[in-house]
Length: 250
Ligand code: BT5
Image 1 (cartoon, rainbow, N blue to C red):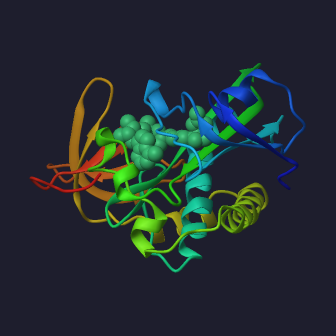
Image 2: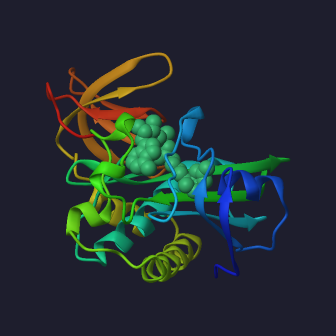
């Protein structure tokens, strides 16, 4: 995989939406300075104010991955984003499956969408939002408790182009590793960035909540939890939080 060319927009509704609705060559990257309706997962919102952060999506047409690898793709992307952050000398943590946190607060999120037919991915759109230079007072009230930015963490302005170059290289690198060597090296790197290993967590799924001690991920990317009876449970999807009472952050 080699990402590019890059198209820049001042404003889009959503870079993911743009790529889902338009046909662009394989590897094309779309960046918007701001998004009017930046999307999170499951209909949630991604706050996307102008001039400060990075909102990008890229498209892979007929990628060599199957629909059953969707979770693995989220995890590969999370590794690429996390190691890009680590390149700045910051220690990132990954919250399963693909939130990137620094000091317990969310710095980046990933939204993957796809077009599937005859059990093949025809189009994969990977969207990444990263808070680069938002100051504390610029963070929307709704997410003040849970969000942070690289600038807040380091006290220094991040040059958007510089971070973008690092990120594109890391995405190329980790997607190539995944394609050529499979999920195992990705799983290893992800695990080294997974900060909640051994911690008590609660996973909220659409219908229920599961409590347990986070162990890691399996070969599919499913979260492994040890429940109160000492059995290992697999979690396929859901939102994980630390079980600690009054846990701060995300
Ligand atoms: C995500 O969803 O984390 C996926 C975010 C993907 C955003 C990118 S930007 C480029 C591309 N185009 C799009 O339209 N989207 C992608 P989720 O795990 O559902 O998390 C959403 C939650 O994160 C919200 O409910 C808030 O709690 C929090 N949040 C929203 N905006 C945030 C921000 N700017 N920084 C940190 N946290 C935020």
